[in-house]
Length: 174
Image (cartoon, rainbow, N blue to C red):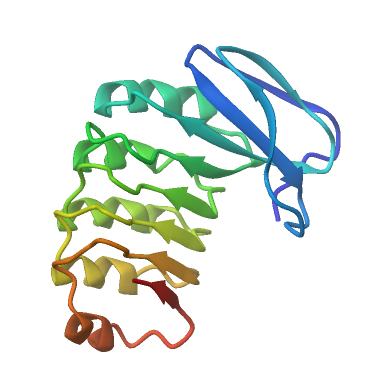
């Protein structure tokens, strides 16, 4: 569990939405602030950042602003069709992420290999990433801490492929 014991701060030049919740994860995310700006995070909280109008180049810049923030546990990039496999390659410094939302992004099977560098990832939303096929499941299998996977609208991922995944500890939403 990544928390801030003392007040923490970070800044962003991007139009982001910042959400917080107590680090025990027992409460829902609450809107905290929006940017660009400087954000002062209360002690004992973890942070989710939501960003829109993102592409691969901008994502690299955003990650450079967010790198090294142990309280950043969730990133929501949903509905950013211009975030592709190239953009996923930039996420590796965000090692404290436990929750990643990539729904409706322009990613493919091979791009998911980059997510294996996120050692604490527990929840992954790939809903409506319609370029994904059964071939992406080999990368899912390589994410040992993953407990929740959203594949709603991923029509090229088959039930047969999911059965070969062999992960009884993984909840899959279809």
